[in-house]
Image (cartoon, rainbow, N blue to C red; front, side, top):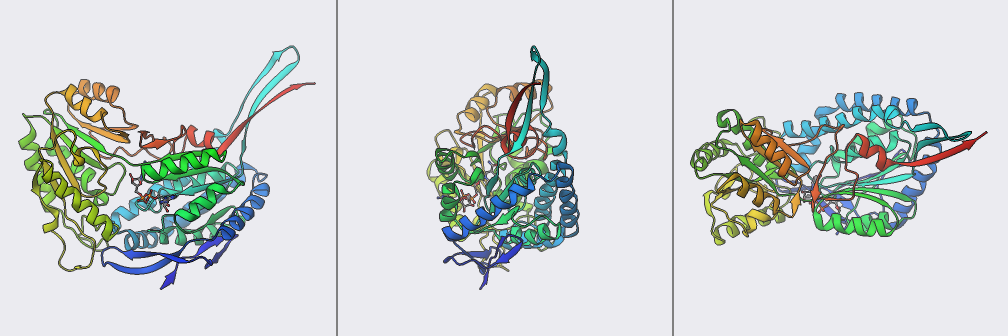
Length: 482
Ligand code: NAD
């Protein structure tokens, strides 16, 4: 079985730890490689080397650090299809979705090129007689990025280009479920000419994360994953005096108003629920309608959901790939059962639409549970799969109330033809990423990815813009009298 390599000081290394995590092609249900749990000594060495490299890298002029981004960007465009194919093989999403994953990563490389403006400080002459004061931003040292399985390329790139361009080094620990895409990208990092040690890749799971969190030379941790793990990483990281930002789980509600343009919006709504097989932290999960539009929305939604072709992501005709693992598939199927047991009505059962050509794959077709009510598991818990729950609200205020009762606050969308409805919705919903007639409210690279409540830990959000400059730099104030 092929072992996933680490990338340390510009070289690929096999690592020494225990072979612990199998990587699958989820469409075939077959093991394709194995991840070792990196030993503490390996992680400490990777961080030590990054620390040494950073002390020189921070002295490279920022205009020169930006030039590496341009090289990396060109290399990523030139290898777009190859990276995307690896992503589809290890994750299962369609080839087009994988290309989107890589393109979103590239957009972050492009966005980081604004660093020379963003890092600028401020100054005041004469804050007292003969005294001037200035604020400069300086790098902090070595950061770690710990990422989830569902966007193997994009999410590490919410952090990597900004951290290094602002003068830090970074150690990336991808998900043990989807480690191959970042492994491939490390060869492009080498080709782009980054100095040895500035960008390191280590592999593993919980133990590796603990070693990172316990290492004194790690200045900050950028985490994305589930809420319990984000909570753990946040607490442990901050108690070890590290900066931590943690994107976490989600439960996203999509409100369809009676005045919405359903014909124009239905493909977009369907994409929100079933894109990436529902394994997206911005995926629609509960569709909120009203008594007067429920039947029409359901009929159009069900028809389109039934038309989606489930299959292997490398086949051109596939609309939706498999789930990540058998255990996760079983968990999602349990929600379908629970939805029925707790009083919902199963109107589309994805267990009946698995592709026959891939009998061992972890497939589940689009599923719909209607008539869900407050308190039901499918109404409140993150499912992370292709299951849509329909809730019928009595009024706009009832809809807002139900949405805001969620412990999560990652995203929410309204479909409407009314500016007033849109304004009321955007002003009253407690979620960080809000869509108006946009089903996946994914901020572009130079805007923060703004989760709230149990969907986010910390105060400075992932991606580009002011938040990343604040997260990856420290402010130093200099008061001078000559
Ligand atoms: P996960 O929490 O299982 O894993 C995330 C990372 O944490 C991985 O690198 C993993 O190795 C590590 N990890 C796992 N268990 C750990 C533990 N006990 N201690 C320390 N580290 C541990 O998440 P996942 O299943 O890979 O990803 C799906 C989750 O991520 C969903 O909940 C989804 O909503 C969330 N997500 C959130 C965002 C966001 O921006 N808010 C984006 C994408 C995904």
